[in-house]
Image (cartoon, rainbow, N blue to C red; front, side, top):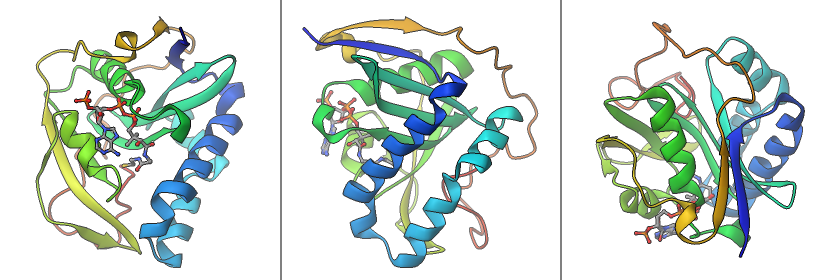
Length: 198
Ligand SMILES: CC(C)(COP(=O)(O)OP(=O)(O)OC[C@H]1O[C@@H](n2cnc3c(N)ncnc32)[C@H](O)[C@@H]1OP(=O)(O)O)[C@@H](O)C(=O)NCCC(=O)NCCS
């Protein structure tokens, strides 16, 4: 049985994690985006930009690995998911569900929001999210604003389909409190606001 290890991102694994995100994005999301949208996303995942968000506690990232390789990652700030990517070979094994569980466990938000890629909408619906608006296009990125109320953790994680280890305390990130970008960007005027970022 495959063993998944879920943990908070270790700083030295950031490059590998961004490489995974880059590869999965090109395969599953880029076909739905214009060149402008692709460039916008690439700017968002630029390593120094992400390092800054991690250092300032604007984002927290959880990863899933198997055999020492990172195969899934979820990035969020408090109640908003801004990155969720799983290696295609491991789709539908409960990895996204477990990463989401960890985010909810950590932040204990009343609700979680996401600006879903067109590809991921069905998966988010299966994860309990509902559409909160019609599809938007901002800076070439297409996305559907979605939201899920939280009633504690969803017990169906990757553990259902493999075994997994969870390590929550690898990096001493402080919770994000009273951050100026705490509100989700799924309503109101989206112009000039990056859809996946705070
Ligand atoms: C969206 C994504 C993260 C889901 O990851 P995953 O690990 O395969 O998701 P899970 O296995 O935890 O599945 C969660 C639920 O969604 C369902 N699901 C997953 N992918 C699905 C798909 N493509 N279509 C329909 N349902 C899907 C699963 O069956 C499961 O529901 P169930 O438990 O009721 O059977 C993954 O497909 C991905 O990386 N996509 C490309 C990148 C992307 O679009 N990311 C979103 C950015 S906002």
